Amino acid sequence: MKFFRVLKDVFISSLPLAAIIIIVCVFISPLDNQSDYIKLLVGYISVVFGQVFFLVGIDISILPIGKLVGQSLIKLKKASYIIFFGFLFGLLTTVAEPALSVLARQAHMIFDVVHETTFLWIMGSGIGIFVGFALFRILNDLDIKVVFAILYLFIFSMAIFVPDEFVGLAFDGSGATTGDVSVPFILSLGMGVSATMSKRKTNDDIFGIIGLASVGPILTLFLYGIFIKMKFGGNIPVSGIYNPGAAEGYKQIIISNLGSVALALFPIIVIFLPFQFFWIKLPKSELIKMLLGTIPVYIGLLIFLSGIDFGFAFAGKYIGEVFLDPNRPEWFRLILLAVGFILGVSITLSEPAVTVLGEQLEEITNGHIKKNTIRMTLAIGIGFASVISILKILMQADILWFLAPLYLIALILMKFTSPLFVGLAFDSGGVSGGALTSAFLTPLTLGVAQAVANAEGLGAQSVLINGFGIIAFISVTPLITVQILGIIYNLRLKKAQKITAEEELESLDDLIYQKESL
Image 1 (cartoon, helix red, strand yellow):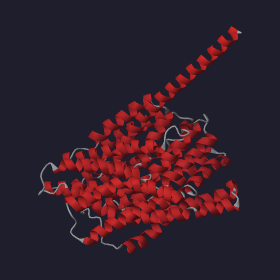
Image 2 (cartoon, rainbow, N blue to C red; image 1 turned 90 degrees about the vertical axis):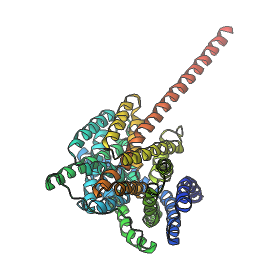
Image 3 (cartoon, helix red, strand yellow; image 1 turned 135 degrees about the horizontal axis):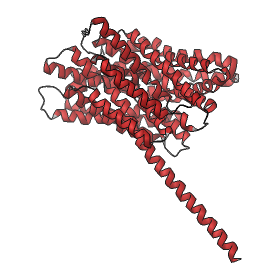
Image 4 (cartoon, rainbow, N blue to C red; image 1 turned 120 degrees about the vertical axis):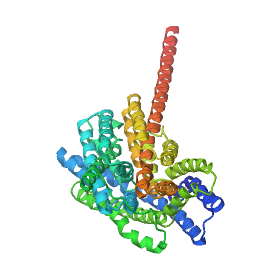
């Protein structure tokens, strides 16, 4: 039965994360209250079962809806209509993205000049504009390598004029916009448009839409940061202490999440139904099955996010602060780096959006690249991303000194990578920063930044500048690791093709020899 097979996979992939929490919170630095252990246990169980319901439901609802809508866009005929609907889909799915809501709450807690709702709509607009642009690229057969090179050169040129408080936050927001709801839908939308409207009719255009969409929020928040800088004359007020509230009971958290999770799925249904009525016209039985499939998706997201809010954000911050306790020896910081790596790996393996991406890659490559291969590739890259992020905080270094070289390496690798894997790499960077990442690793780094600020006598501005950035690194390391995977894959493919050609040539020689012998 699929449910139990998915449960087994999710449980096994979550064990490293559970092990880290137990080692730190039970043996290294036991929690003060017994109720805190109950929070962690409930949070862990909720995250596991929430993922299972989500992954089971998404295969029969969100993914096919995205593909059907994408394929039916061709019936609109005019490119302007297609691009408009791409903008609309991107905007609505992003504003309702749970991972982005988590990040918005975290940012507002420290940086009250950034209103949560304003933050959501700014980021959603960026995604919408660039989803439309991604569809425009497919329709006009623009070279994806050239497009990415131009956009990221522009981003780093623009970053010079952006306040420090907004740089890490913009990159983090970009990663959080493409999470558990938007990724499956936008990916499927891109696959549908690519299959029916791409001029080349190859797999090369299937990936890349998430990577291009992720550029939009960076630029829109950069513009917002420049506006805020002009408004306050360069002296931007920063106040507040990061303290993720786990004081609410589990029941209250579930009740508070009922509406937000429904809002995450409602726009997709609203978009799908007019297309179904006018163009898709599925049989009634299939339509009902597809709509019923959104129920386990809703239940899964509700349980998953509630578990994160109840126990995981608290655990992430606690672990981040434990290893910087001034009463502990200096070498404890080195353990924090190892913990960060393991957490990065295990959380990536637990991200639903990463699993969805892996399944689609396995389907496209006809099983030549298994979903677990891409998951492990991303996990290792993101483990190193966590280490780099923690090092940046401990050194209190400018994030651009780390990000710029990493993106430069990624852009150079494009020259040696096929367009399919370039698009996949940038999509992987977008999908890796899901709800679990935002709700566990971001609290971890904010906890580390707050501990450093307290030890150095620094204020909330230091926490804001140094604490954010983990999702930025999570978004860039897959660009490198996945492109390396693509280079290896293409080399093996050429080798296999060469061997096949040689075998066919030998068979032909044998056949000629046999005829001559006769």
